[in-house]
Length: 128
Picture 1 (cartoon, rainbow, N blue to C red):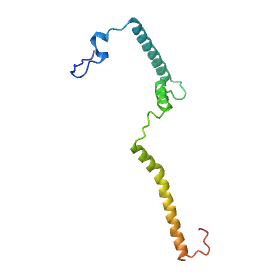
Picture 2 (picture 1 turned 30 degrees about the vertical axis):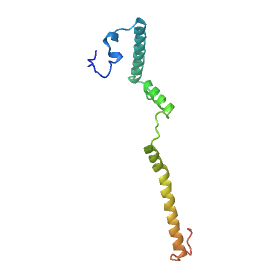
Picture 3 (picture 1 turned 120 degrees about the horizontal axis):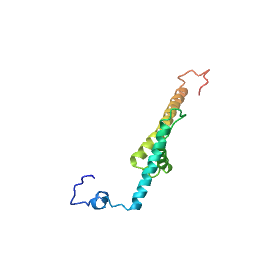
Picture 4 (picture 1 turned 180 degrees about the horizontal axis):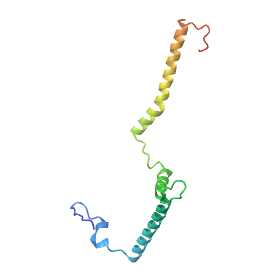
């Protein structure tokens, strides 16, 4: 058992209480043994698939798949809309469009100004 130093400010965790550490009912032990057996079967099945020399394709870990599905099923608990996220979203989405718009509009104004000043010869020019 883990050596646990008592604290004046916090009580001992229930899992480390020596009076209750070995105090499992037969039903709890049976359920615990069933869970261990199921985990061992799943691990053996995965390792047999992983080490099969004639396998075709990838072998995926079902625990990782379950975790990824559970995490991506509902992204809202995992996504926090903070000021930093909002600022980065604005900078990565709106600012490039604004820069492209100002670049095109300034180029167009410069071209129109040179056209009005007649500083370029546009007799056979096809571009506006």
